[in-house]
Image: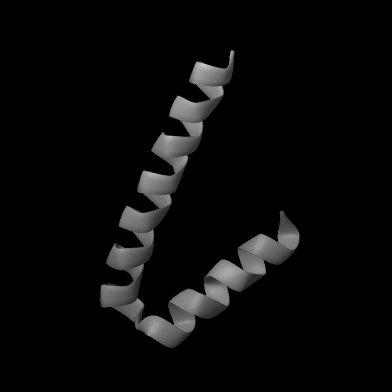
Amino acid sequence: MEILTGLLCMFGWGASDFFAAVSSRKIGNILTLFGMEVVGLLV
């Protein structure tokens, strides 16, 4: 179970890094940071 949790965490972390980089290039750093903070607040 721990291995599965670790793999899911690794996949989620990598996906979030990828999407943050793409978003940052498209809409800018400030709006990306704001969007990440809003999502973090809701979660």
